[in-house]
Amino acid sequence: MYVIVVPSTLSLGVVESQVLGMATGLHSKADSVVLFLGKGADERKEVCSRLYPQVKFLANASSLLSNRKKITGIYSRSVFNYLKVYFLRLFFLQNAVLHYDFRALISEESYLKYNKKLRFWLFRSLELFALRTANKVFTVSNNLNGFLCSNLGCKREVIVTPCCIDYSEIRRKTKLYKYRLLY
Image 1 (tube, helix red, strand yellow):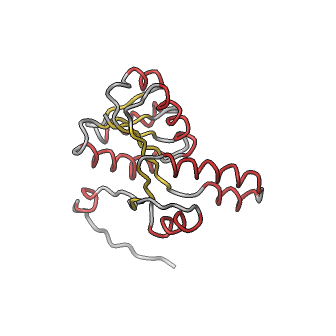
Image 2 (cartoon, one colour):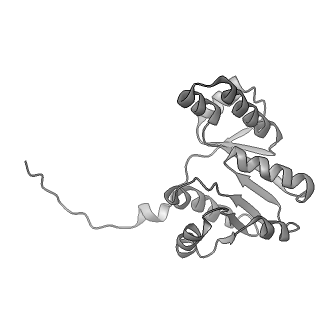
Image 3 (cartoon, one colour):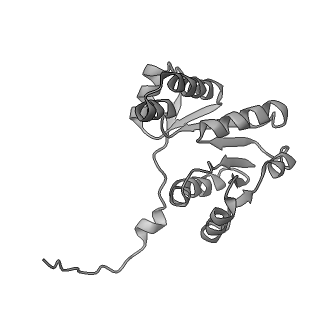
């Protein structure tokens, strides 16, 4: 079982467009893919299960731990969720491999927003920890990959996976309407 940890701050649109697309793509490669939604899961679970009935869900940490022998891999895109999963792996999920996806650098975003150096270094150290301890590292772009290699000293393979899209939406024929502008 491959578990995708969905951050609670992720909007439903991002979950639908990026996370569920990745989950359905992985579903053919893994024996089963499970989303761990965490807080505020009810609304997101209802929408996600309607759109993707083949994807299963875990509601809380106890359900995660009760399935610990089946879990082979865990994917996270939040450094805080990664830390939680890392410490769970130390004690309960020894067989699971950890995958971390850098979608952005919270240290840089935080510094631009708050201009606090202590906060910057705290977040930078968390990102370095995730970069060095994850079994596989993903990024969203080649530029972010280059930044990781040059500024964080990443000497390992980083897999670049752009945002997932649902190709069935693109291939679906839609009726085009003509609009007129009124001045």
